[in-house]
Image 1: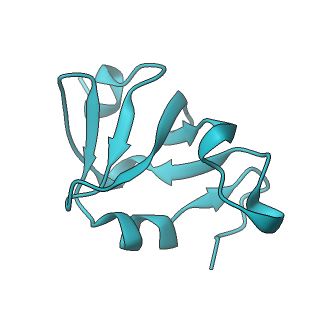
Image 2 (image 1 turned 90 degrees about the vertical axis):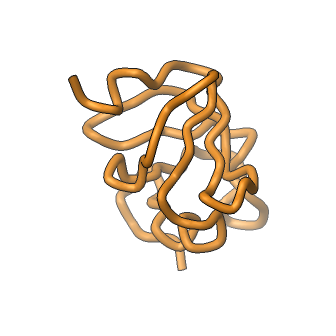
Length: 86
């Protein structure tokens, strides 16, 4: 069983530092799809972002904890079209 199998809709995603990264919409193609509410500002606003499943350290008590701090995890986010956010 993959750690991604334990992830479900509306779970909070936090970095290793405990900082909120987003809220799970669903798991899709080995990535966590975040809700649009956590999409950021400017040209990032209003669409989904994705976190690579390889960044998941553990899933416990309705929380997805990443192996990277939030600021680093955000650098690895992808937008819906597959482009990395920089």
